[in-house]
Image (cartoon, rainbow, N blue to C red; front, side, top):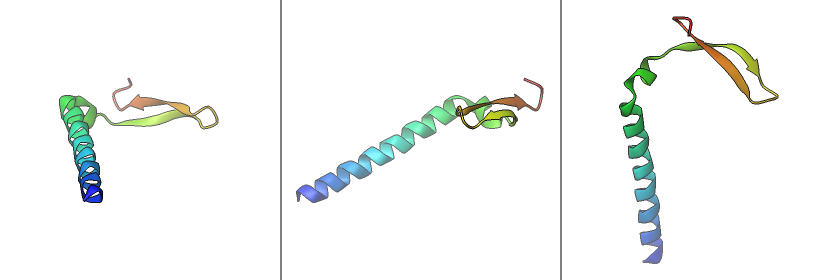
Length: 56
């Protein structure tokens, strides 16, 4: 019985995480529409620079 409740708790936590991620995405619709390309990439340091299609 304990294993069943643990599995249910795990599934509920996963669903809650997915719902929160979906809410975050819907909160900022402009982020979904933005397209950019990598202008500089520093793999060793773990970062890079992006440039949007409108030059930002």
